[in-house]
Image (cartoon, rainbow, N blue to C red; front, side, top):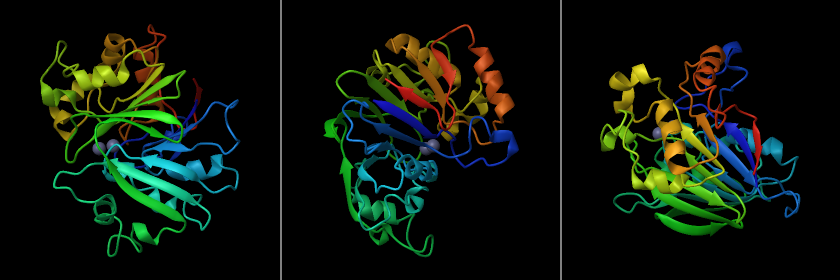
Length: 283
Ligand SMILES: [Zn+2]
Ligand SMILES: [Zn+2]
């Protein structure tokens, strides 16, 4: 599979000259089947719809999006790109959008419309052009666009949140962009618990894309907002046997120079790198 990192910023977009190399768009990863198996339509499975979703239109070279968007949760930085997804908002688009089953049983379109409808936004989800289907998903394994997608609930803050494990039968990508493992306890090093859901999502993955919002010295003051230290992501990859870990969901004030410092901290471990918008990973 080919994985396009379309947005690796967390919380809010970060435009400007200090954010060029790692990018400022919020959470979005687009996945295309292996080139040899592909019918040339580009990405068909998209995880999260932050402002990085706008980049997916460019990957489709003028074609409409026909595929599935699966959300980890409904925070702004994971849905704000939705109404600006030009390749999905046209008459010939076909989009299935899935989000975690909500406590209380609210429907997918209803819960999306709470943040995307007047007076918050000019249109609701049903105002998107093309053939859109909205649905919820439960933890477990399902097929989507030819991929096997496993969903597991992970602790975060303010709304049910899933991590995903995507396989094409040859390669595995694990995606946990928002994760607060300290909510389950300090764990062996104080970075949070290495709990069964996280370990199983990342187990022997070819690549783990994981929340690295905080620096270790920020954990005590800021972990209550729902995120871990980058060190937890590295610890999880080591314990789960993931071959690579990409540190992602960067704090909006983290400049390119600050993220270079993060990369330098882990330079002795070749499995660790810092996710950058526009990066393409072939698995
Ligand atoms: Zn987020
Ligand atoms: Zn979040």
